[in-house]
Image (tube, rainbow, N blue to C red; front, side, top):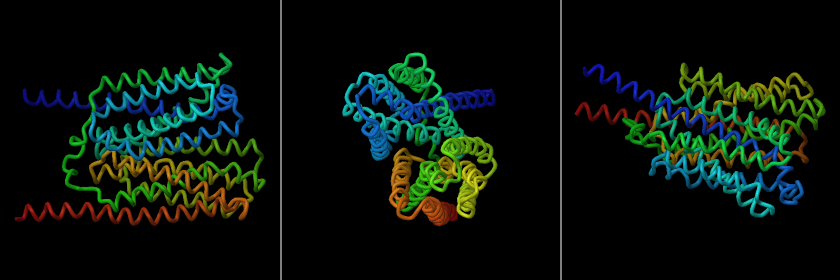
Length: 408
C-alpha cells in the first residue's frame, strides 16, 4: 500500500514538472516571437509615427535599456513571490503593450512602450530560467538548453508570421495583435500550474552560498561570452563585405547561417548535457569558438574559411549561457537575483564589445573584428578557468565542514 502511494506521488510529481516545463517552453517561444518582431515591423512603425528610419531605430536602444533595467531589479521578485503568478502577470502586461503599439501615432510614446516591453522581456527571460532551474534542480542541463531551442524556434517563426499578416492586411496592426493574442494562453497556462519554490530546489545546496566573488566571475564570464557572440553576429556581414570575400546577398546568408547553426548547437547540447558535466562542455565550447575565429583570422580571403568559422562559432557559442546556468544549478541553490545579475553581465557585454569593434573598425580595418573577438574569447577562457577553480573551492568548503561535523 505504501509502495503504491509512493509510485502515485512520483507520477504526480513527474506530471507537475512536465506541465511546468511545457509552460516555460511556450513562454520562450513567445519571447522569441517578440525579440524577432521589431525588425520586420520597423518600416510599418515608422509609417505609423511619421518617422524616418534613423529616428525609428531608437527603438532598438530603448529595448536594450529596458532589458538592462529589467535585469537589475527583477531577481528578488521571483525569490519572494509565487513565480507563476509573476510570469502570468508579465505575459498579460506584454500582451497589453503589444496590443497598444499600433495605436501610437507619435514616436515618443512608442519609444516608452518599447522600453517597457524590453523590461517585460527580460523579466520573462529571468523568470522562466529561474523556474525551470528550480523545477529540475541538478538535472536542469538538457532542459535549459531545450528552453533556448524554443527561443530560437520563436525567433525563426516570428518573421514568417509577421510577413504573412502583412501580406494579408498590409499593415503592422494585426501583426502586433496576433503577437498579443499568443501571450494570453501562455499566461493562462502559468496561472493554472503550481509554482516551484526556491526551498524545494535548494535542498542540501542551501548551505552552499554563492559568494559575491563567484557572482562577479559568472557575470564577467557572460559579459565576455555575450560580447563575443553579439560582435560576431553583428559585424560578420560588414566584415565580409569590407574584405570583398562575398557578395551582399551571400553575406546575408552568412548571418542566417550563424543563427541556424546556433539553434542546431542548442539541439546537440540537449543530448550532450545529459552525458557530460557542464565544465567539460564549457571548455569544449570555448575551444571551438577560438578554433572557429582562428580559421577566419588565418585565411581572411577564403570564403570557405569564413563559412566554416561562422558555422563553428554558431555551434560552439550556442550552449554557453544555458550550460553556465546548469553549472550553477549543480553546485549551488539558484536564485532569481543571481540569474538577474548574470543577465546584467551579458547585457553589458552585448552593448560594450560590439561598440568597441565599431569604434576601431574605420581606424584599424575590417580585421579588427576578428582580433577583438579572439582577444575577448581568450579572456573568457581565462575567466572560465578561474571560475571553475573558485567553484571547486566553494564546493569543497561545505563538504569539508560537513565531514568534520560528522566526525565530532
